[in-house]
Structure formats: C-alpha cells, structure tokens
Image 1 (cartoon, one colour):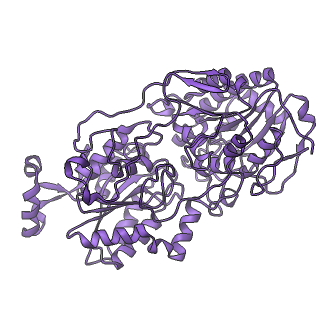
Image 2 (spheres, one colour; image 1 turned 90 degrees about the horizontal axis):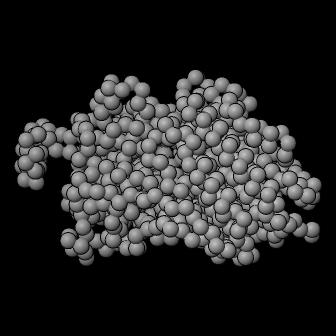
Image 3 (cartoon, helix red, strand yellow; image 1 turned 120 degrees about the vertical axis):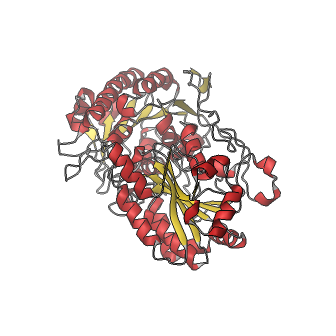
Length: 600
C-alpha cells in the first residue's frame, strides 16, 4: 500500500465548541470576521463530522461535549460511555449490586444517626450528570432503610437553560416529599462556576468554598430553603445565570425542632451558632456517607480528591480561612531534540496516591480535617490514581488510543492547550489516562481566572507561540483552542465573535509555519456551541449543540493530490484517529478503529 510522507508535522487543531449551522442569528461562527477559516473551508477538503449522540457513544439526540469529543478523536472507535453506560447500569440494576453501593448502604445503616449525602451538578443536562439518577438512588436508599439524606447542589445553567434551576429544585423537593417518614432535603448549593466544580486544578479556591459549604456549614449566604435562596438571588440580580449563583447553606432554627433534638444540637454548637439560634442542616460529619453522582470526571475529581486523599495539600480541610495552593504561572517551554524542557510544570501534577479505604484505622490527627465517611463516586474520576476507590459503575475502558499507537511506532508527538482544556487534549484524548506515550510531550498554558467573556481571546496567542516554537521537533502536534466553547458558554454574541476572530488570527500564524515545515493541518472541533447562542425561542443558550463540526484538510504539499474523501456515509470524530495514522504513513492502525476519512 502506498504511504504518505510529510517533511513537517501533521497538526491536529481542535476548535473547541465550534460547530456548523446554516443559521446566522446567534451564530458567532458565521458572524465573526474569520478570513483564514472562510478561505480554508472554501479551498480545501472539508468533511462535516458527527459529534453528538450515538456517533460519539452517548444517547441518541444527546448533545456532544468535550469529554466524549476528545475520547472519540483519540480512541478511533465508538465507546459506549458517559450517560449511555450509566443508563445501562441503572436499567439492568447492576448498580445496586456494586460493592460501592452495598458498602455505602451498610455504612449508613451501621452508623447510628448517619446521613447519606449526595452531591453533583444539579440538572438533567446529561453532560456531567442527570437528576434522574439522583432520584433513583434516593428511592433505592429509602427502600434499603436510609431515612436521612442531604443534597448538595452544584447549579448548572450551562448544559441547560441559564436560569432553569427553580424547576429542578421544585422537582427534587416534590420527589422527596413522598417519603413521609424520612428527612430528605437540599442542604447547600452554589453555581458550578462558583464552588466545588473546578477542573484541571485551575482554582482550588472553588473547591475550598464547596468544602466549607458542605463540611463546615459555612457559606456567604444562609437561607431556610434552596427555593428561598434562588428567589433572593433573582431579586437581587434578575440576570444572574445559575452557574454563577453564590454559595449558600440551608439553616434551621433550633427552636423549631423537638426538645430532644434541640439539646443534642446545642451540645455541639459553637458560640456563633448559639447567638444565631440556627444550625446548618447538612454538614458532612464523621460516620456519614457521601455519593457524588456526576458521571463525568473533570469537574468531579478535585472534590473527590479532597474527600478521599489523606495526603492532601491544596488547602487546610480543618479550617475555613486558609490559603489555597493554586497554580503558578507556566514558563515558556524549551524544546531540545524530541525532549521538552520546562522551567515550570508541563502538565497536571497530583499528590501521592493515598486513598482512604479503611478510615476507621486512621487517627483524627492523621486525618487532618478529613471526615471519617464512606465516599463513593458514580464512576471513577481518575483512572491512574483510582479516585475514588469506591465506584458504583466501572469506568470506561479504552484500549489502543492514538497516542499509544503512535508511541509504539516511535512517532514523536506534542499536546498543547491552556488549563481549561489541557485535560481534554491529554487525559481524554489519550483514552482517559494521564500516562504519556514514549516521545510524547505535553505543554500546559495557565488559563486566566477572570471570566472569559471579559478576555475572550483567552490564551490563543500563547498556545500558538508555544506551538510555533516546538512543532518543528515533532511529527504529530495536537492543540486545543478553548475560546469557542468557554466564551460560548456565556451565551453572549459579541465576546464569542471576538473569541472566534482571535482564534482565526492564530490559525493563520500556524498555517504559515506548517507550510514552511512541509507539513499539513487538520482543523476540526469536538462539539458545537459557538454557532448556536440563541435557542429556537430566542432565549440565550449556554449549552452545547448536536450540530456537526468541520474537518478541514489544510494541505499545500504534493500529498494533497494523493488522497481524496472516502465519502463515508457516517463520518464522525471517531474516524479522525485512523486518518491521522494514514497521513503519518502508518496504514496498519488497530482493527478496532473506524476507517479513515480519506483514501489514497
């Protein structure tokens, strides 16, 4: 079989959240002045790719997301994952027979007065979680004898409508009200971009605020119910999106409880609590159990780490006013031969593995503020460190991802992005693993911590600067520009247009270097978002879309005449891995991969 050869690198550019839509209204992709992209789409081979639903291994009609999108790009195969795999576990009942579920139920029932806590993103968005899973677990826990449950909500407004939380609160309150002899309530809440749900260690302060809210019962605001909290926040700021709702705890006046309960609470109350005459209703205490019901890892792994790792140094878990160990600025990478030399970190570094599995054998002093609880996740959030140790549904196994195949064939490769998408272009692309292949480099540019709609260009220039310096030393380079997705999630047209225009400038810079080196560039995306910022009812849309994404073959070498579209009827993201292998002169890719988008 004839093989292709390039003097320069094959470059894969992922335009995060950039889909294709014929409509102009609310479409930042079409309204932006993107001279390079417009010309590239017109001049070069461009194959629309399916990036949602069954094409990426999730439920039919389900919008795509960055996790499954990068899994699909790197795996080369359709993996049943995310909500699809979880739904199957609930349908078969396998989840109730898992060691983690049985362990949680045993723990709660053996510890007198114990509370079962649930936490996660609170919606039916289906990207990180689904509230129906929470409902099923509450019902099953009740059937198994649990009578006290507390729910800690990370409000969404991102994968669902931006101000939709009241309906979810009403839904869960109504659901819990059917259990007449039980005490099932929402105990705390915050927007997902405010507390708990940080990712890629960008802002441990978010995790700390969530910890204080759930464990210490401390938050900027206190209310008698979650409904009261939302009404108050909406009154104070009618335009606030759910993802930015302030952190709060639900409190209850001691006098409203029975005399026996009052005496028990007063015995452990602080002076401040006594003065206030109220108590947070849902602190996570020794003897409790906690199930985190997200099935997507990136916004769950940090809080899971805080709840399970004895060796933990990101913040003091025993106090509420401590300094946070956040990231330092990344120095520019230097490239020597095929090796990367960094003055600072070149990827996510984690604390030494130290899962707490037999908490009863560890002294209170050794626990350093870590409650003595049973913690489980709906699935595994870190496959390398196996966090958490207790999982209700086994993690997805992805064999022979692209980076492993290239490493086995001695192909040098480099992954680059900024913090908010670094895990996607590395961990998810590499089959849910932080392990690098031989001759694989990874460079992370630290993201801004300010709202991205105020800095919509993000780190696109810095990502490009790093790529231009390094790409001459690698045969395969992959990078992710986050702007289309991260700015698009604000559902604001002008900032998202600016994000697209900033990325377009950087693509032009990349293209010049690719031509200079004699390489080629595939420009695609992981899912849609920026092309649909207004829904069919004219309401701002912060969620992803089900639209196809582009796949442009920017190639000014003689090789461009040696291949053409394979005209696949079901072309999708999972066809990209074999395409890259073919472009790198490696036609003997794994038989489990889907076929390439091109043929020679």
